[in-house]
Amino acid sequence: MTVIQKKEYRPLTEATSITYLQKLGYFTNQVCESVEIGDGNLNLVFKVRPVDQEQGLIIKQALPYAKVVGESWPLTLKRATIESNATKIYNELIPNLVPKIFAHDEEQAVTVMEDLSHLQILRKGLIEKKSFPFFAEHIGEFLANSLFFTSDFGTTPAKKKELELTFNNPELCDITEDLVYTDPFFNSETNSFEEELLEDVQALWNDEVLQLEAAKLKLDFLSKKEALLHGDLHTGSIFASATETKVIDPEFAFVGPIGFDLGQIQANLLFQIFSRTDQKEEILDQLVTIEKVFNETFIRLWEEHSVRPFNQVELIKEKLEGYWIDAIGVIGCECIRRSIGLAHVEDIDSLELDRKIAIKKEILAFGANCIKNRFTIGNIKNLISDWSNKS
Ligand code: SR1
Ligand code: MG
Image (cartoon, rainbow, N blue to C red; front, top):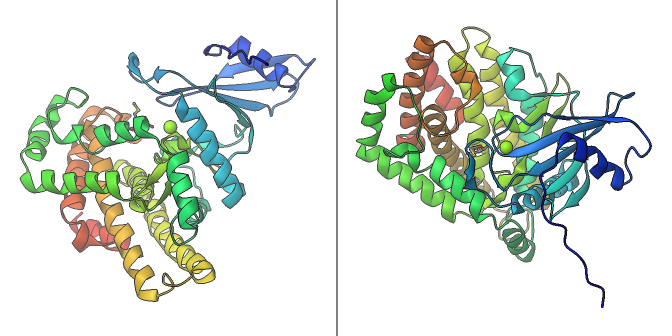
């Protein structure tokens, strides 16, 4: 009997990331350089390249704890395999919108993938006011394809149940359940906000209607099994340039409510509308285009692939309306948690204090309105015209 010796998990360093790749057969006999470039909350990310070439490979390794908090917050390594599996599915559905995966090592929680360093993290690019003219169309297509083909409209009941098993992701879902849907709505230790916001925050904590509606949204997140979600689709999970868009980091992937992915990306674009003093139009156009491209593409896919009894136009219309109502609620939760919860966003946190406080107050009120009035707001177009009329 062959005994397979499992190698103990070890976090890579810049030096060992090079030997790791060379053992896999990449860049053998070449002098390489490795730089840790991870700026997210959870993982190590190394760019390894031969010194005489610009393009290399990316090695991403999950740490057994959340980097943003430290070793006191243990976190499953299984998320690396979830991410690699989700990226493989995306590679089948929308290969031009995700990185290629070259290798995955479950024990070391390591994935070797395409080097995208010619692109920029979208959040950073937007803060620098760069233009991304194709981004909205690309992300609308990404959302429609990834969500349609993993929903009951686009896959078989058996395959859908398989997706639920493969993407059983309780630990990462738990983070979202706490940080997005629970902690910001009461006096939790994980919250972090400026003392100038205390009055506004207490008003949220005492708002019984808001509490009830946030609880309903959390129940949706827990119980709606509509499609395979990316699960953390903010502007830090996207690489982009003037012509390309690549969605990365689906370690939070699970089968959940379609409105979650739709709402997260929209909320993170809205942070730009709140923080900018000019060039807001571009972002407003992106919000509307994403909704339009998503709806049109989802309907086209449904027309081409639907089977009885799911081929009735009333059904798809009703469902699309529901996804956007859910998305408005998610926008509200994301607005509140990124202002007063554990994980903030650079778009707002990098502002000078007085402006930051004023803008956060606006975002908190906007978020609460989205959560409480999502059924009457209904969609992004209405949300924007409502907002423009008030401001
Ligand atoms: C402890 S993780 C904090 C946040 O970072 C991730 O990107 C998710 O958005 C999560 O909520
Ligand atoms: Mg991430």
